[in-house]
Image (cartoon, rainbow, N blue to C red; front, side):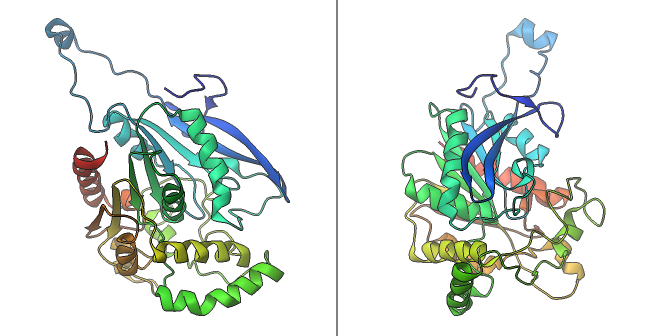
Length: 335
């Protein structure tokens, strides 16, 4: 279990088996800043009488003895209980991190999700690792922008983790490198002179429609912490993202095995289309698949037909295949 034992943990909003700990961070221009780590600690499974008589013990999972640290994406937070349950069955201790100004860590008066440099999240990640402890293999799992953030951290921290699992990581701008290079100077000027200016929204709510139980999806979550049309976008935040994309394009040389999981196709359209319910409506999966090969010398790219932007929020059959393929990959590379 974590290095801090049970001190500082309290019940989490996800209910039985989930606990959270608030991690104080250095304040910024908007005041006090915290991150929040969530852990999954279900009640021990009851051993059957037959197992006790025969002294049978369950086979160790593919991630037995490891710890997992999950990082959410943009306009998001950790709510995927079934993801934690998968890692528990695999034998790992599961932790998720709500970054500063996201989800459980968002405080009144703060600009949701706002950051000017993705390196700032190093403090959040280090605080979480201090709670988890460094005495066992660490598997990093990142979704979307969280995948970009963890990829950059991993490149700066060789030897501190055993593997990196990326769930639709946002590794390149949707308009590809040419589009990024075209807008980067303009965004950079905005970041310098009008960092908190509100930019036009690019989230039309299609992704929410595919995942939320209030619409066509099956998942329940907080609309305050995960708004239908995402958080407001600001020049300084977008500049930080573009700088991250530029670093990936140059190559990161991550020294551990990497798995990138993506949908088979994207649907980046201005109007709703039925195919969006079985594709990625947030990133260009083709360019991200290419960028994944720039992460390090050992990268596996898995394409899942019918997957959504969060492949583990896809329809049941697709979701089950995603977990099965992840387990198969873990058997070969996780340790």
